[in-house]
Length: 144
Image 1: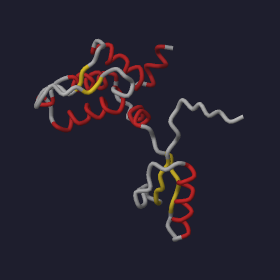
Image 2: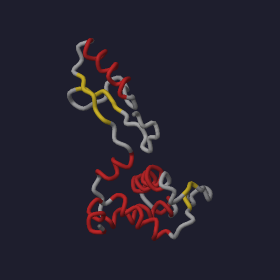
Image 3: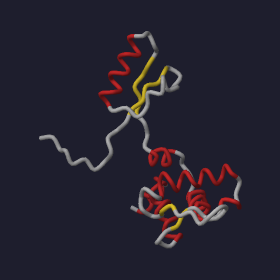
Image 4: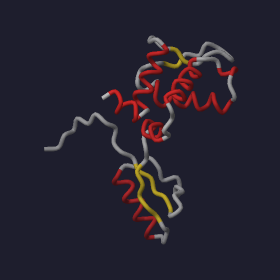
């Protein structure tokens, strides 16, 4: 019997060439769409392959950040962007938008120009701990 109650989002795929570059922006495809696109690419003589797309959470887990780096980025996310280099603020913002907010630990709240952009109903230290437990594979093994 087919289980239609899926708790995880369906997997998405992309079509890449031999060097790993995406072909013709063929990303975010379902399996059927990806198979059709792959066949079309192969019929046109392209060196093409089907590749899984990682979820944002899987990408962050694959970065192997240390616990201190995660705590620092979460802290920066709750602070004001004017105190940090743009590259550091954008990395913290990406973590907040892709991991922290989807898990419900914080929400977007623009306090104004040059002010903080995120807020939470939890204690910030608990948000940091939740993020560390989620992103650090080693800490999961230690806690178990």
